[in-house]
Each structure stands twice: as C-alpha cells, then as structure tokens.
Image (cartoon, rainbow, N blue to C red):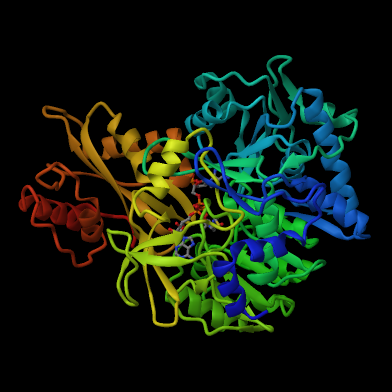
Amino acid sequence: MSYQSQYNQSLIEPEVFWAAQAEQIKWYEAPKTILSTDENGLFRWFEGGKMNTCYLALDAHIEAGRGAQTALIYDSPVTQGFLTYSYDELLHETAKVAGALKSLGVQKGDRVIIYMPMIPQVVFAMLACARLGAVHSVVFGGFAAHELALRIDDAKPKVLLTASAGVEFDRIIPYKPIIDVAVMEAEHQIEHLVVYQRWMHKARLNNDRELDWSDWVANAPPAPCTPVDATDPLYILYTSGTTGKPKGIVRDNGGHAVALRYSMQQVYQVSPGDVFWAASDVGWVVGHSYIVYAPLLTGCTTILYEGKPIKTPNAGAFWRVIAEYGVKVLFTAPTGFRAIRKEDPECLLKLQYDISCLERLFLAGERCDAATLHWAQNLLQIPVIDHWWQTESGWPMLATPIENGQVFPIKPGSAGKPVPGFQIDILDADAQPLNPGEEGAVGVKLPLPPGCLPNLWNATDRFIDGYLSAYPGYYFTGDGGYQDEEGYTYITGRIDDVINVAGHRLSTADMEEIVAAHPAVAECAVVGIDNELRGQVPLGFVVLKTGTQIEEPILEMELVQMVRDRLGALACFKQAIVVKRLPKTRSGKILRRIMRLIADKKPYQAPSTIEDWSTLEEIEEACRERLTLTI
Ligand code: COA
Ligand code: AMP
C-alpha cells in the first residue's frame, strides 16, 4: 500500500488499520477491542489482548528458526570489550536474570529501576523485566543522585539494578557512590540493590541487601514469560517537563509492540536479519525503542555501542562500527555528526572503511541544521532522513516517507510528513488549525496511535493538564512549527521551558530551582541558547540578594558545581551572568524568550506589557560584555 493510502486509512479507519497491524504479532489471546477508553476517558489500544513483549523479542524468533542469528552486538571502544549474542544466547541470559529477579520477589506490576551504563546486562535487565511483566524504569547514567532519588520516590521500585561504573572516554565514573546518596535521599526504601561488577572498578557492597550480580544470577533458574495484558505497563521513562519534577511516561505492552514493529517496516524499512544501529543510550527513549525493543521485535541485529562519535579513539568511530558489522541503517542525533565534522571536517577517516552497506541515515532528537544535513548527504551519498518524535510518542511522528525503495523529496529544515497514525496540525491559541506557512503550536489529533503514552505514571491530572487541556481534541507536543503546502512539517523548537542539549532533553525550570537555592541568589532565569556543537546549551541570569558580597566568578563556579551535583554534568551548565534585574511583564512573568533572543544576538520584539524597557538594555549589555559560551 502506498504511503498516502496507509496514511489516509490510518486516520479514516484507525481501528481497521491498527487491527491489521496487530495481526503481525503473536498474541496469547487476541485483543477484545482495538480502541477503547478507560475509566479516565483516556484512549487505550488492544484491550483484552494477552501477550509478552520479551516473548515477541526473543522466544518467537527462536521458534521461527532464528536462534543462531546474532541479536545483539556489544561494541565498547572505551573498554576494548566486543561481544555478540545470538537470539538463543540473549534468551538464555535474559531468562536467568528474570529468574534472579523472581528470586527477589519481583512479580508482574512491580517496578525495577535500572541505572546502568551501555553494557549487555542492561539489555538483559530490561528484557527480563518484560519477561516477568515487571515495569522497568531506566535512568540515564549521566543523571546525578538527586535525579535518581526523585525517580525512586515516584516509581517506588522493589529492586535497583546497577553496575560498579560507567566509562566516559577514558574517565571511570563509579556508580555506587551516586546510588548510595540517592538511596539515602529517597524516602522510598528499595528492597535490594544488585551491582554488576566491572573489571575496571569494583564497588563495595555494604550489607546483605546489596548483591553481586554474578552471584545473583549464577544459580538462578531461567524464568518463563508471564502473559500480560496489552494495556499493562512495560516501562516508565522519566523525561523533563516544565517543572523540576520529571514526568513518568508510561508505555504499555501491546500498543508498543505493534507500533514499533510497524515503524521498522514503514519508517526505517528494515527486515529480519538486517543490522540496525541506533547510536544513542538506553537511558533515552531512542535507546528503549531503537536499540532494544524495535530491532529485536523485528528480528534484526542491534548494536549496543559504549563509546562516542569522537575520541573513542577518533572521529572514525562510526565508520568503523558500520563497516565492521555491516550496518544497513544508522540512527543518531545531529550532534553526533556535528562532533565528527568538527574533528574531521574532510572526513578523511571514512576513507579507511568500506561503508557501502549503509543505505540510510536517520537523524532525530533535536533540530537538524541545514549545514549538518548537507554535510552528511555529501559525505555519505545516501538518503539522510531527519525525523521527529519524543519520549511521549515512543516512535516517529514525522519522517520523510519511503515508497518502493524511493525516498520522497527531502526538504532541509523539515522533519518530513506525518507518519501513518499521526494527524499533525499546527494550531492557534483556540486550537484551530492554521494555514500553510503560519507558525503555531504542534498538536496531534486524538486519539494518538498505539505506542504513544496512554498516561503518566500515577499522575492522570498532570497528563490531562499538561498535554490534553490546552488544545481540546489534541495532544500538545510542546513544540512549535509550521507546515508547507505539501504537508511537510518544520519543527522550530520547544515553546515551553524544555531545552535540548546534545539531543538530551532537559528542563530549564529544573536548573532554575537549583540555581535559586544558592544563598546569594535572589532570583534567576535559565534559558537555552544556540550552540554550534550541542544545538543548545543553558545560560543562567542571576540577580543577587541585596547586600550580598560575592565575586561573580566564584558565584558562577559554585552554581556550575551545584547543577553538576544535583542534575548531572550532562546539563552542560557552564555560565551564569549576574544582572541587576530580570526583564518581566507588568504581571511579573519573566521574559525568558526575549533573553534567549538577546543572548543569541537575534532580533526580538518585546511585548508592550513589559514592566521596564531598560531591563532589556541591561541584559544586552551583560551579554555583550560577559557572554563567553561559544555560539
Ligand atoms: N554518565 C556519566 N556522565 C556522563 C554521561 C554518562 N552516561 N553522559 C554524559 N556525561 C557527562 C560527560 O562526561 C560530560 O561531562 P564533563 O562536563 O565532565 O566532560 C557531560 O556529561 C556532557 O556530556 P556530553 O554532552 O555527552 O559531552 P561530551 O563532551 O562527553 O561528548 C558529544 C560530546 C557531542 C560527542 C556527545 O554529546 C555525543 O555523542 N552526542 C550525540 C548525541 C546523542 O547521542 N544523543 C542521544 C539522544 S538521541
Ligand atoms: P525527547 O523526548 O528527549 O526525545 O525530546 C523530544 C524533543 O526533541 C521534541 O519535542 C523536539 O523538541 C526535539 N526533537 C526531536 N526530534 C527532532 C527533530 N527531528 N527536529 C526538531 N526537533 C526535534
């Protein structure tokens, strides 16, 4: 079926369309309804269906004769560790971890937090939870203890799985001290902590609630799959919102499996046996969907890469991995390519490798600038497809379609056309669709297709208020954008307090909370400003309490350290500028957008409701004199 007919059918007859897609997976019991609403009036897919995501990702392929095929390749230039697991082997490892979790009393519906680096055990752990019907919540290893504690208190896990250390380039980051602080800070008490001891650093286990991973799994009997309802949660993934409290995005089992399988066919166009590489981290949604679940649900070979695009050992790292394993489709964030371009502008290192196996490159996670797109196109001479989605959707909402092997025209600056299942409209403040060329809020007409968040973890009101109320009949994505006459959509950026640093989604409100806690700070604003490498980086503006005596460089150093300690180094919070006042409207609203435009040296138009025009001149002057972040 053509892209257009699929798209039309998915909107006109969503239940017929998704019922057909649901037939592609093996259910223990077929769904009783395709689309229904729950007790909160929220849409649910495939109610009554019984299945198991781990069964579909592993056992089903083995039953179909793919047991000997490589399922997972672990490539770790930072530790010189290289391993492969066939589907048989991956099932063996996963079933043992599931058995070990069971021995700790973990059952269907229990939560398990996973705070681990990019090692095979993280994949075993995620799949093991899925096997038991337990709900995993993976926390990105770069988050500091406080962020982990927030997640422990919200998810209330029975068990926390971790490793003794992560490795960042050549730096060993011990995890246990972070865990110890988080566990102490959290009110919720976990029952057990299991630590995978890595050779480069051994963690000290303090009591008998803390277990060594190897001993823990050594004698564990393999656990079978527990059937779950399609609507049961598979995982919770916390993401940044507009407050300091992260939002627990819930993913269900049935809709997720159906949607991800469909996306591999329709968006990425890969088949069983193909090698698919998402160069991301399992701590992000890209890692959940396209390192772990989608490739395995499809019977592909997936790559778990513990390294960076550069300096591990050089900017040829991506080309080596592609050539070595025969990668057909690569998915990464534009930052990765910007980093390679910066280190190796002529891309001479690529000449050392034969990467003719690579058929398509997909970029997402942040806006792709035209320069990076053109550089990648010229370099690779293959389709480079910018596509757009978010933690909440779990799979792409916009992408340039591929039909009969031919990619539709790629328009720089656009993330493509809506993927079947998603009606994307650009809305005005009254939730009315705007005309082509007019910029507004990006909304997705309800119901969202399968695979998207059905709700937030234990926060239905926050879900309804944050996503469904502002534009009735629509899910509000938090992004702004516009469309052209041909339905291509251009995402112009977040219109809330979320920023994107090297493809990592962070909340400026979160950083403001931390900065405001400094005893010298009266008030502050953190904005995301343009950055050539990372897309955006945060910049703080602070107003001191009257009478405070502190040297600006010392204050800045302390604030930078506070954000690193409380949120994590990944925030890249590196500069705070002291100003006399923050520009505000007469009703007291801080004009963050205007401050961002000033810092980016872009034209701006202040609202007539501004309290005092001279505050803008003060910000301009402060940026002119003291802004050192490279743009
Ligand atoms: N554990 C601990 N610390 C981490 C971490 C992790 N998993 N991930 C990042 N950090 C730390 C880094 O060590 C760095 O600390 P530093 O300030 O002390 O040096 C800081 O967080 C910033 O990390 P990062 O933005 O990754 O910077 P970098 O210099 O290490 O690498 C790039 C720069 C461009 C190579 C890197 O950002 C990159 O590969 N980006 C690709 C984007 C991507 O994959 N995004 C995923 C979403 S799809
Ligand atoms: P995350 O939930 O971490 O995946 O971040 C989602 C956000 O990243 C989106 O809401 C967008 O703001 C941004 N984003 C993701 N992909 C793109 C893209 N292709 N173009 C522009 N912005 C993007």
